[in-house]
Image (cartoon, rainbow, N blue to C red; front, side, top):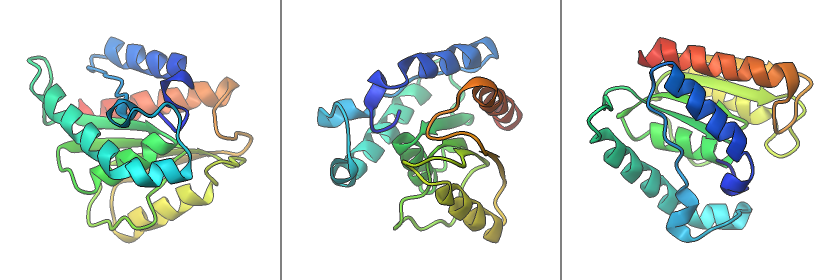
Length: 182
């Protein structure tokens, strides 16, 4: 989830999880804000809590990886906005993550990248919260380092995908995760 917490986008997150489950994936929705008792975040709160949230997500992956039906060699993360920044940051240092879907996110400015798993970048060109330049910066890094990625920029979309673009982004997410993790 992003800086709005689970209250913003809960239905979307649940829809993604259900569709992944129908395709044979085990899907969990991580509420990393609980570790800092955060309800909503802004830039200052995010900067302060980012390391704690990274640890929380890493610990959740450790816990989930021990579940009997989970293949610990097929862990993927889907992050929305702030959640995408966290997913990408963690994937640069945690080799257990085998795929990342970045939805309206980007790399934290200080993040050093030596490796990233296959990455799907989904962003709206009209995003006023996380500018589309973040998607292009990430693409440049991935391209420069010859790391596998796919990118879709939706010209008429802002910081959420609606209508046909929303459906297309979901289908691209499902196909990407099927391709990389199955």
